[in-house]
Length: 139
Image 1: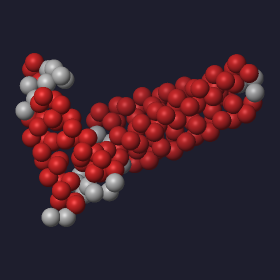
Image 2: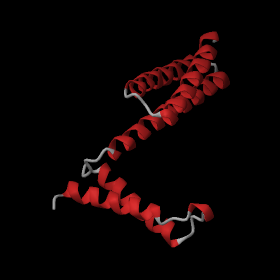
Image 3: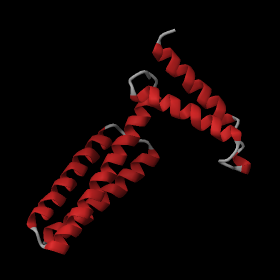
Image 4: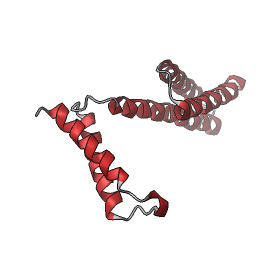
């Protein structure tokens, strides 16, 4: 069995483990939860090193790109605050760069035709980027 089949087998084990969690009496301290978590982490690590060929690997990539957008927005806010504190224009430029990076990542994420939940999150990021952009333009 090659490593890609191993990753798919681990994914199947993860799905089985998740089905055994009693979400009606949700408790993350149960052995069922712990087992699913450990198997899920193993699958994620296999995907990180390129051993995964399933569709779920795309889900992981989409989630990471959304997190990158959030990181860029956070960076823009951080540099804008530093600009406000110091009046050093280089911080203002850095904030604009972070927003530009976030906008590029946002466009790429929208081009992948995101699912409903991801689409909502991307819309909120779009609104947040627009709001920060307005603040930066006033300076």
